Image (cartoon, rainbow, N blue to C red; front, side):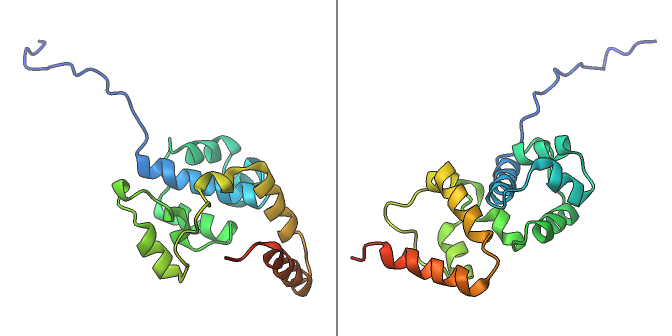
Length: 149
């Protein structure tokens, strides 16, 4: 006997949580800064590259143990994945900066700077320098070339 009490609910469109999208974007940012492919990251985590794609788009939520694994493989603290989260999502750039001892955001520096190809290539090249003393000298050289106010 069919029941008249059963109400069919329209299937809700599943949208990723903005927090999951943010965390996934930070995974993608760090992976690309390291010059690592989705396939290589997946191999390190025992995942397929399709699963990595879903994490990076925020379609699949990243659990605590997976976040821990990602932090180890990508060599960042877990808090990195929540850095620069908009205040509307519960983030606070000022609190994050204070906790990491960073200065206030510099004028003229926006989030888009980190996503430019030139920035990514520069960071990749910098981290390919194996000798820490040479890497430090390159860092000091770049700092010396920038104008001071």
